[in-house]
Figure 1 (spheres, rainbow, N blue to C red):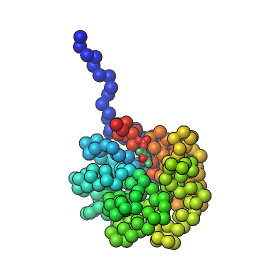
Figure 2: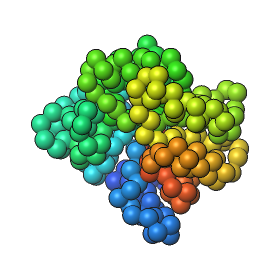
Figure 3: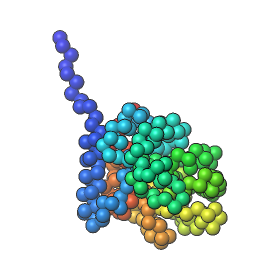
Length: 250
Ligand SMILES: *Cc1c(COP(=O)(O)O)cnc(C)c1O
């Protein structure tokens, strides 16, 4: 007897990326927002270069990783190989005074960051979504000054006040954002949240947006594969989407 033909279809990253992009555009239309306000961060954690290259080829230039060491292995060859799509000359996106979105490949740190990895993080990443404590601010400020690179910084808010989760508690957010500036000279550009897995995400998106608004912050990193369209309706400027683009992680 012959074995049955496999019925699973090969994952098509270009089609998946197009579907996500269209869903973001539709959510923007519904919310009366300009799709140009929303940056799709394609979360490539655990996926190798072979899986990432087709997504770059399909036109995606902003990627997210959650471990410094993994990013430090995977990304330098890709940044080198695709340097020609990086606007003018060297990678200018993280340099002081350069615009945050100049069309080149951009790498965003979305995972917990240890202070002893601040040097590599400032060197590798154009944005860090997980600023969550004073000791990390001190380490980042030192490296930003030393390397003359200024990644875009988001403070992570622990909107669900979950004991096991990183992030600043909502009631401590205003003081933390102010201290980043006054104590460390760091500009927090926006807020990031990861809603508790079992909660409806909307109250967490709304709370994060409210804290950003009262602190005059314009950027909101919220929304993942399951809820990015909803996050866009609640003002997300950065959605972090992994499995909906790359397929399930192994
Ligand atoms: C992995 C991860 C994502 C992407 O998750 P998906 O559900 O695969 O889209 C987003 N944000 C953070 C912080 C992550 O660690």
